[in-house]
Image (cartoon, rainbow, N blue to C red):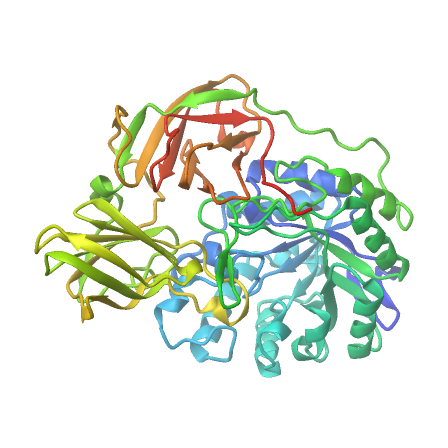
Length: 583
């Protein structure tokens, strides 16, 4: 692969003038058996480069454990990109935002209550240096200087929106260089944050979704010479629970792209293909009110969540063709979809009854945070004994993020961080009744100072003003459901329950799981965690990648946290339902 050079006039590649035409494609949001298809479609739209973040929290789930295989096999992703003739912009963090859980920063760092993330705190920098060593050492052959596809590597991510410590950015850049990164480095920031996020000697780039002339003028004011580049050209947006599905008119977005390319600038679409926040990996925002992101990361991108070209694909390809060669041929057709069917969920297993098989309880005077339990995602089940009989007021200092409260196994209420709820009235039928609190981590905050986002019941828990002591805290990551004992579903279980059914497939293909009548929870097919469902919307279906299915019998498990009036059936359909859009 040729080397990218930066000079006063712009980018050059092996001495020839070069414009980066890139699109965001996060390998960790796409099933690995579909990487090649998505990369091929990037090339067919006219892109010469793809961009990806790297999620530190998935690659290093524990300080002494590093993962880079299966769906995290970044070297394989880079090999496939190179095979398509695509260059790569690599954005390893340590912080990535990305509407991803905790902005990609691993939760185990939060076990230390005094740590300062994204700073020169020695504890944080030591962890970053270790992460870069583990990640980048095996990636050296993939740098363009070694004949690989990686043209450039980003330093941090939109740091100007968080802080202004140039020495911190210098440490990140020095750490990358110490790990053998000898290709160009770059930073990216929104125009108003460029001065705070810039690093002398490193290429600055800007992020915006419209007003290219204004954005690039701000970049030129900060950086009088060198290439102009928009590293995040926002062509869509993400959704949050309880809002509408965000879309952007294709022709309007294409017009903004035309304005940008007419300046001669380079671009990276955010996103070319969004993918999915499978499992529990979605992030959240908290600007005085906590707002978790939905499972789908469709992003109204040129490729939709299932990898099918949208109207933006054609509109953008037509614009790109005015400035660069575009491969001949028609727009790729939509992929095959499974025939629609209804699946009966014939068996159930209560969550509270199976808690002991799903996690081991830890005793302590107070409820333990999820990070203290060395747990990343999922739920924590807290239990203690109520000392009084009769009505009482339960008060929780901090609910992170959603607590379902039970007395002797019967539901008595819900406390939601999103609604700033801290107290509820309950009645204990006897002294010695069991208080059970099931707390869901709905996604760690991924932007701003709120990234210091610990989960569970935090602070004091009071009953009529007196602190409750003597708790068990049971982590329920739900990474393994094999311990569940299902029984025929003759009645709807009281409280949270898993519902299971099977269906037959001849030729596996993409499909969408629709959970009409369900309230809230998660879903798995053949053990693969599809993500969260919630009747609050806007998202009403979950994407099921074809490789998750198998010829023959397939198993579906749905966790329903509340009562579902149609818990007996779910539907597989050929189309998604991401919810209503704002008119």
